[in-house]
Length: 462
Image 1: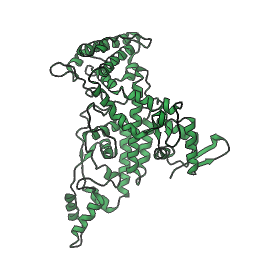
Image 2: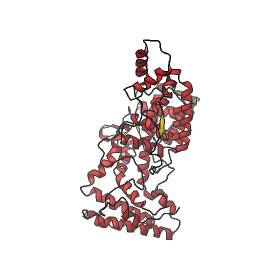
Image 3: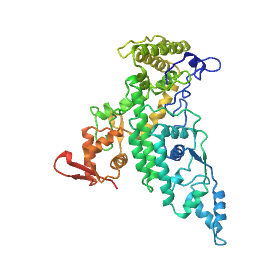
Image 4: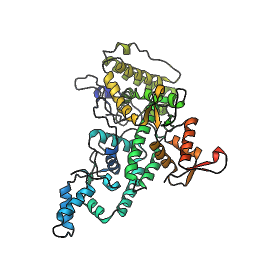
């Protein structure tokens, strides 16, 4: 497919209202994040949406079921001693329901039947399905795990499940999917997702930890790639340094210079990137979606570079003409660099969008969008005195990530464990690595094959 940016599509699309006035709408031609610029209900916990994620991955949604209706259906098919009907109903209520409509997540099959309780949760579930790994591969793994769960269930559990039906998710296929900016975490998420589903007793709890961590990690890597514009690399992880919760730190450490400070700076520009990419995808029918990286791949020669650059400049000029309350934006000049005409045009469009929001009364809208993700990031942050907030590796996170790294292997070389951390976008400097090694030793997880540091092995955590 060809990239055909269209001024006509831009003027007649959703970024202008019925009166011809420009509005900063996004997500109609290009979806990147599940956030809103005016959201008052920021999602900080993913536990309530795990069932929604699994259902969206499977391509269906649960039909709502009332306790009393289900109890009546089971009574009709079960031989119950006379006078014990009420006792039977109470057993069903206590074992399988937390409220009259909310099912108790006893295992994977029951977890799937807990729908998202809000549109915001549903959007994040949809986002996770679209961007975390290959959707078909993950769906196949889920199907196998569901079949295994049915085999492991007792008779009463399967009787209850037989009365809980699904229906097709009519939303599927009616909207554009979220665009995957980075593939760097794709394969490792697929591995970890499959591993978690292999543990029927722990899968419901670990699935929460898994999705919460990868929601943070994927979104952080995407934001960092966006800040590289057309120099980004879809297959490469940008290092983000953590420190251990119990270690001392300082402003000279990588966890300060190349950790939260770097990520926070990129997060603040999220909404500008969202709008720029919405504009860059105002294309003619049949054109493929592009992000900055895809745009760089489309430039094969100087002629193509100039052609695309010219189209972008036309839309930038149109955008500037529509903004009349930002003199700072109209003082901007396009910078010519050695990166190429299209790269210069993209950066100029971005600078106009950014300055327009940062210099006018719209700054609240601009910051509220990024604040949604920044608020979620606090799950992985800790205040460290003069160093301020830093990315934090808690004891619980360290144990969980170590489990994911080693999986069912009896042991893994310590240096390979740290490489496995980095596959999941967790980087540690030498001081933090020493603290991790000491922690493993306290748990009796280190086995030394010799006195060499390279011969240290970490045993599997049971």
